[in-house]
Image (cartoon, rainbow over all chains, first blue to last red; front, side, top):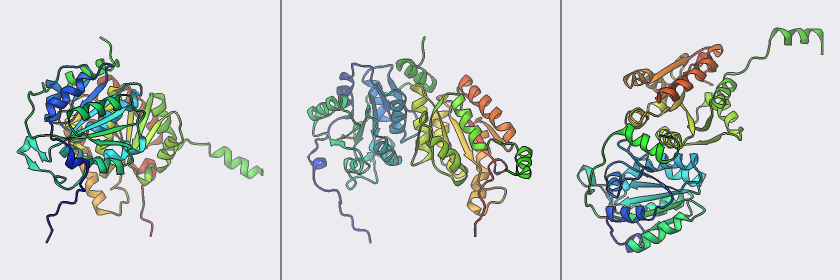
Length: 207
Length: 185
C-alpha cells in the first residue's frame, strides 16, 4: 500500500504566500519597458497575460500544453539581446519537465521562467496534479542545473525577483503559489494573428 | 602509389555521403539551429553538425520540446531543423496540430526511417506505419528520400517552399539512402 505522506521538505514553499495569477501578471507586465518578450502557456496563464494588456511582444499558446518554456527558449536563442519571459502553469510544466534540463544545460542569460503553482489542473475542474503536496518545482529547477531559482514569498518579493531577473546574467526560475481563481478574460483565439503580431513585435517582420 | 591503386581511385570518384549533403543544404538555406533526439543512423549527421561552430545545436529531452524551441526561434528570426527517428515523430502529432500547423511555422523535420527494410524490432515496424498517415492527415508536405542524387535538390527546394508558404515539411530518410540500422548479433 502506498503511504500518503508528504515528501516536500519544509522551506521556502511553505513560507510562500498564496498570491493571485492576474495580480502578479500585471505586476510583471508593469515592469517591462524594453519590449521584453513574454510567452504564456495554455489556458489561464495566457488568458491573464491577455487581460493584463495587449503587447505586441506577447505570445499566446492555444494548445501544445507544456511548450511555453521551449518556445521561450527558442526566442531567447534567436534574440540573445532581448529579455524573454515564459509564463507556465504547474500542470503544464509537469507535461514537459525535461525542458528544465535543456535550459539548465544551455543557461540562456536572457530567459526567465515564471511558474504559477496552484497544485491543480484548474481549467479542467481543479483536479490535483501529480506534484501537488509533494514535488518542489524550485528544487527541481535547481537540480536541473539552474542557479537562480526562487519561490516568491509574496507580491513584493515577486517584484524584487523580477527586477533581479531583468538584470541577471543567467537564467532565472521563479515559482509562485497562486490561488485557484479563474482568469479574468479570454484570449482571442487566432493563431496566425497571434504569431504575426508577435513577429512584428520582435522586429522580425516589417509592416 | 602503384598503377593499380591509381586506377582504382580513378574509377571510384569521391561521392559526398548523404549526411554531408544534408549538412550543406541546411547551411545553404541559413538554418542556424539544429536540435536532435539521437538515432543510430543519424550519428554522422549529428557529429558533423556538432562540429560546425556556425550552427547552434543540442539534444532535446523529447521531440515535442524541439517543436516548441524551433517555433520560438523561427518567430525570433532564426530558422531551425530537428532530427529524430520515426518513433520520435510519433510523439509529436498533437503539437504539430496545435502549434506548428495552425501558427504556420516552417518547421523542418528530418526523420530517420526505422521499421522497414530489415527492421528487427516489431514495435519500430508498427510505429513507422503511422508516420505518413499522420503527415497526410495534417496536410504536411513530406518526402521520402532514397537516392543521394535527389537529396540536395529535395531538401533545398523544400526548405525554400516551407519558408515561402509558412508550413512544416518532413524529410523521411530511407534506409536505402542511409543504410539504416541492422541487427547486430
